Image 1 (cartoon, rainbow, N blue to C red):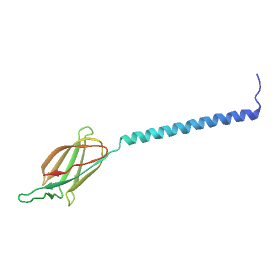
Image 2: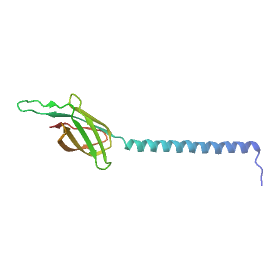
Image 3: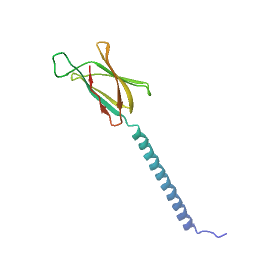
Length: 129
């Protein structure tokens, strides 16, 4: 058996340590990329819109303030409720991509029910009651 001079042995150990450190960095970068990829697929969209109403003899629809708008997704069993502002506008932030049932309630009565598809990019859904 031939003996390796001590200087060469240290160089070999440094080389192995460098390779292992490189693998750890590469593995960490790979895991970080996969994590961002996974989080990126979970990005949610916003649903915005305006609730308006027409009256007899009025040509332009008027905004309906302070009505409740709710969305429900059967897959997640998640219901979210908001209220329209003085301009009749509503907004739901960070909804998961999918199909939602949307309801509008005014003075304690349901006045609208429908379906809306929310993509990752979000969508606008105006409602006339």
